[in-house]
Image (cartoon, rainbow, N blue to C red; front, top):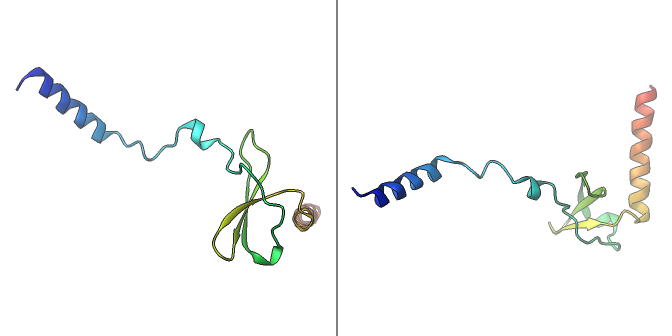
Length: 97
């Protein structure tokens, strides 16, 4: 077997042993998920809310709608501000008890 074929075989063997799918590069893991936000989302069409706090990004609120579509919510939505305020009050009340 010549040297080139041996080098290619060694390279293929090395690449199959390295599992890159387990780790995300730092730059991909730390990016903001929400690039734009929706202001006109009604509370009754939301199935689930997810809050993401990623370094170097503002608080991100992702809503899963009844049709399974995911949208980022604007933090200025009045009902969302009230929801967050109620959640903070519950946390504060739980700490004082």
